[in-house]
Length: 177
Image 1 (cartoon, rainbow, N blue to C red):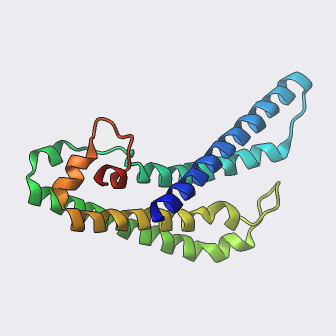
Image 2 (image 1 turned 90 degrees about the vertical axis):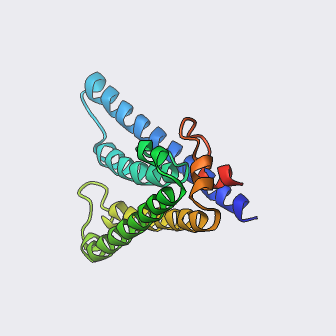
C-alpha cells in the first residue's frame, strides 16, 4: 500500500515536471515567434517561464534523489569493506539530512520577506516562487531518512549490492525489495 501511494506521488511529481517543461517550451517558443515574427511579445511569459524553471529544478531534484540518479563517486565505496561502506552511507545520509534542515530553516527565515514581495509582472507573492524550498527540503530529507533507515536495517552491503551503479534506473527501495 505504501509503495503504491509513494509511486503515485512520484508519478504525480513527474507529471508536474512534464507540464512545467511543456509550459516553458510553449511560452518561450511563443514569445520568440511573436518577437521576431510580429515585433511583439507577452511579458508575462518571460517571468512565468523563469518561475517554472525554478520549480522544475527543485522538483526534479526530489525525483532524481529518489531514483538515486545524482552524480556520485562510487570508486571509494568499491574499495571499502562492509563497515567502511556502512560508515560512508550513514555519514552521507546524515549530511544530506543536515543540509535539508538548513535549507528548510533558510526558507523559513526568508518566507516572511518573500511573502510581502510581489513579482513585478505576474503580481503573485514571491513565496509561491521560493517556497519550493520547503517542499524540496522536506522531500529530500524524508527520502534520505528512509535511506538511512534502510541502511541501518539491511546493512551497507545490501545497499551497495542493490546500487547497481551502472544502470541507475531503479530506486534503492526497489533494488532492495
